[in-house]
Length: 390
Image 1 (cartoon, rainbow, N blue to C red):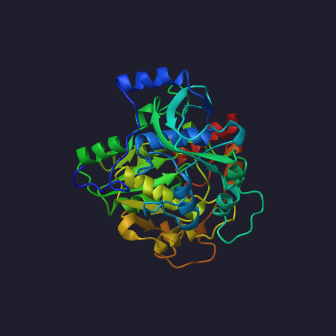
Image 2 (tube, rainbow, N blue to C red; image 1 turned 90 degrees about the vertical axis):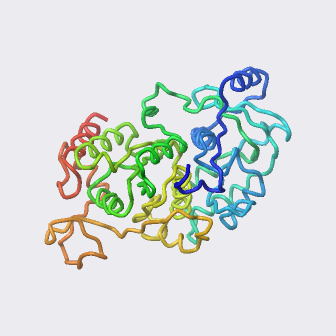
Image 3 (cartoon, one colour; image 1 turned 120 degrees about the horizontal axis):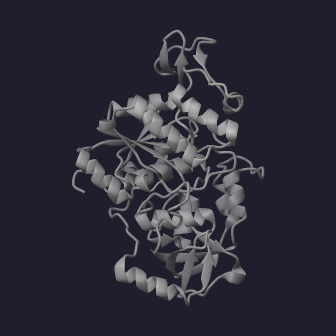
């Protein structure tokens, strides 16, 4: 890994069992207590197993949970913004020092866990971190998901048996499902020392494309790294988005400086804190520069437009290491005849082309292409086909 940014915590974790060790775990699991994972927990198992959540080797114990909730740090002092927990109902909680088998939502054995700790899940404290100083209105999807989780947390290391639990499923993307060690190897193969990454859970429109290409101008390569784990109802399905990314890259990006891979994490919709998590994950994948745009990982109006950028100013950059690339809101200017932002072009009333998500969905549902200044026609056609047949 010489020349690449070091993983968070200094070492890339690998909790994937292979060969005889994997066979032994599968046999052992037959006699272990069973825990059925939620979709988010299943995504977390994969992220821990492949090292994307380095330095975590399993689900958090109480000291890590308390440190993350109160001060965005693990017990060892490393920055970490969001709890990664395995919660269950108290009645179903195993004893500490026991071993349990973890099953994915589709019934596949995913991992075996050594339960080092059993502790109360402070759901109220965890839910509050989704709002900062704002009032909890009972509608935030991330906070509500936490409140619905079990009242007891299990902490301890995991050994992963099956990384991708549904390899035949429509959202497996095996050709693009690269682990951090694999992306690092590919970066080295390409000779990339500096790599920018773009996080997305939506199709890439012209403003996103502008951010990506600005980043490409200052780094050796760009990793387009869409999240394909659990998202909220109403988000565009991952397989549709992947078709959009592939078409866009083929038509409008340079293959030698562009790479597409997927991140199998679940969305938490935690705004600024999730922006930090997304950056640390990409650091583990070997990325040196992380694009942070307007309302990163936001939902509704819970966060300020640039809160996800400002939070990086509060962090220890010697520990963070990855560099955030902070971009203002961009849009097509009719006068400039190109993409501009508040930093690059004066604001002129009625000059820039803005479309709300609602407006775009309405147009797609009617089979209408949004303006070419907002989205590429090839991407619009894919979205129209999905919207009119959904």
